[in-house]
Image 1 (cartoon, one colour):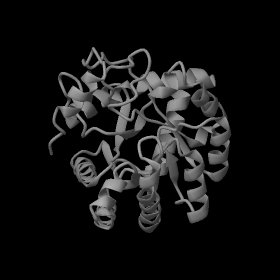
Image 2: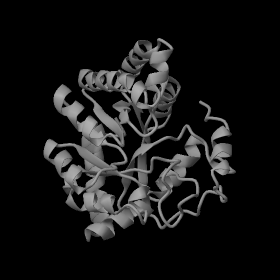
Image 3: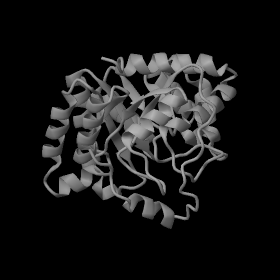
Amino acid sequence: MTENPSQYVRERAAEGRKDLRYPAAPEPLTAPVYDNHAHLEITDGVEPLSLKEQLDRAEAVGVAGVVQASGDIESSRWAVDAAASDPRVLAAVAIHPNDAPAYAEAGQLDHAIDVIDELAAHPRTRAIGETGLDFFRTEEDRRGPQFESFEAHIALAKKHAIAMQIHDRDAHDAVLETLARVGAPETTVFHCFSGDDAMARICADAGYYLSFAGNVTFKNAQNLREALQVTPLDRILVETDAPFLTPVPLRGRPNAPYLIPLTLRFMAAELGLEVDELATQIARNTVTVYGSFSD
């Protein structure tokens, strides 16, 4: 199993990132937790970490496992291979909404969905994801395949009786409308939740889970902190979305599951909870959503 080459690192450096070294490990958690969503196939930093190095670093600070998310056929296969090779990984497989138009234009969307269907049957695949809608990067006249793909992924999550991880960027109303119209899977997770407190209440009332990433620590993310405040504790998850969204005070550095303690401690402070209390609840929620990592 090979990680992606260094093109990603060069692109990130070109965006103005000056420090591509992995940060020092934070103080370990005393109650273990899980990273709900990461992309460990994407290498980052001047000294990229292997899958085992990523997981070992995470385990050393109390991050007991990672849900490896996907966005295309290649990364979905990578996720299943990773989950089969290490008990600290579970797989989520999907075609990302921003990739759906390209597959459709190549006449390959139906085939791609069929591949995801096959990969979803693997016992270590515990979610369909990430799927959903993205109106930020995809132009209006190319969004039809996003809806087609999203609805197909909803059907797969139901067929395989596994969770679904939603990517929602600048498409809140359309995502919620689609879930209401088609019928959401029994277990639905908004990965890297990006709405406000009003949307969080709607999601909570519908029984959805909200996963918070490092951007909840950003100065301009008051909407996320307000959303966190109104989300029931039994519906909260935490993630890195690594290698993206590195939390403050390390914003701009490579992100990785071993940095989860920074986000978790910030969330606990916002909620007025002990860190162990929040970690224990989130770990319980994660196992409820995806099942045991040891199975």
